[in-house]
Image (tube, rainbow, N blue to C red; front, side, top):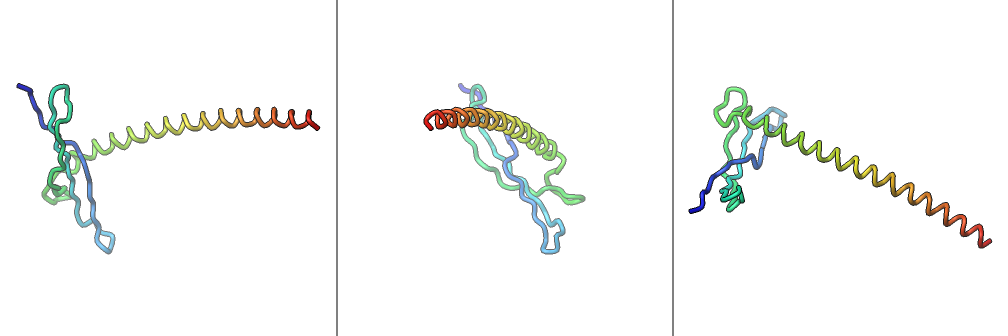
Length: 113
């Protein structure tokens, strides 16, 4: 018989403010995943939203998700910085190639004249 486990991961975060700009409330929604062998996802479904405890409110502790949010944001920033660097190198290479081809093209035109 196959062993199955359930895992909850952050899925969605909703924060609400009043028309005056005051924080009104927040909810978090998790994605419930059923994992099979080798942690293969068998099924995934968003779970019902839970209130987040802000200040003295009752609900899901905000500190339990901030660390994961920070980690995820930093991973995304790191990925985008690597991608940006690679694209800059590609642009630089293409710019040099274009300059060489333009110079060669100009030489051919001058030879024809």
